[in-house]
Length: 333
Image (cartoon, rainbow, N blue to C red; front, side, top):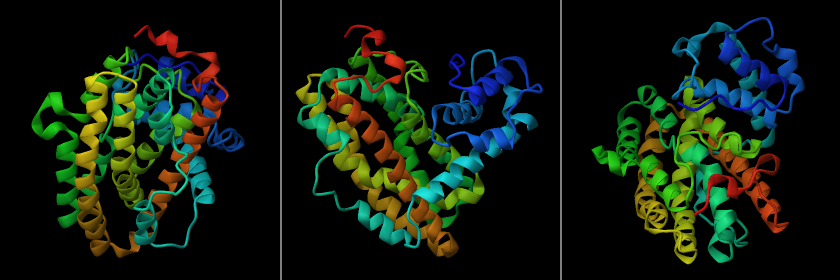
């Protein structure tokens, strides 16, 4: 299990103390949560820690804390703040088809992280990118499974078909999270689940918390499908560039293979998710159309925030990790 992270402010300090010692009188109330930046380090780490109880948990934290009423109350307030901010910052008024069709067309300006890494990124930048993405990819596909019992018919069948591939088609060595761990090993990084949590800035935590937020709430099942569709639609071209970057940087065969695998697999998944999962869901529950669009738009919004953070730091020649931490701390390659 992962060790409890280092707090980043009063909210995360109270939550982490409660996980370590048991809920007491010091947990934050709605007012304290409302005063915090919903995208900031403190609120996002507190939410990440509470969500992790539904994944693998933390070292020394009893399993029954997952359903502790006091902790769930704090999580509810953090989620309300986070969700309100996301709804305010993403466009509304368009259909799921409009949101997803936009993702099929790559921007003319090739300024994203994968473009930078493929074109002229340095090895230390790739290692930072992988460190931060490990919080997502080492639990890849896990939160999306929560939506399966909430689907039926075409949507459920399509979702399970894609997830079967994500989990290696029944082979443990082919699970995508394991392939990412192999990638990390090629780069000389620690492959332990959650190892780089303390290095991750809030922008990286938001991308992971988004899928947990959508996955854990049945009311947000449409948004979770929108998120999943956005990831699958945009994955193949980005993975092609990252595979090329790994090859150019001579990162290693496993590093290159992870992204090469996603070029082909996600090109197929993109068709299934649009024509079976999304179409099937909206045939059954057409009133979720706006939620699917919101999930896709929110995904783009948080991914863009992370990309801006990474590129701004790298353009100045400095680390994108938190508090002056450096890639060297991960060990030599």
